[in-house]
Amino acid sequence: MVYDSIKNIGKYRGQSLWLDRAIDFLETADLNSLPIGRTEIAGDKVFFNVMEAEAKEEDEVNFEIHKKYMDIQIDIEGTENIAVGLDIEEVIEAYREEIDFGIVDCSEYVMCKMGKGRFIICMPEEAHKPGIVTEENRYLKKCVFKVARS
Image: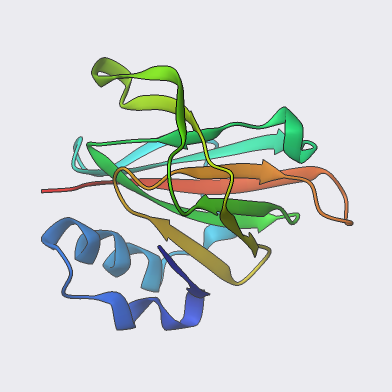
């Protein structure tokens, strides 16, 4: 997991070709002007989804895992907490390769407060629980990059 200010994203260059492609895009993009929906940068290797959602109470959100992609999550408007699990204790919904998604439970985790100017990178197989409400407004507009692991 990487949690940092978006102005520092270039420091994470060199981890993988596909992550570098996402970083190249993020260093020049105006996040406020990105269209809602899916946009491809490098086909199915690097793409992002811009979405609008409502943050939820922590007990209404599940830890999710992916195996094919790492996530880069960025709040464009609004604020959320994202929990990152330290150890997976239980599989709630088995991983489905066709959608690169599974639901797990973690009793120990760290909580990262997001918001404008921050990003988080969750690595493949790293349990994370996005969309947790903060004390601010529940409305979120966010961008989630999917970056192929290889």
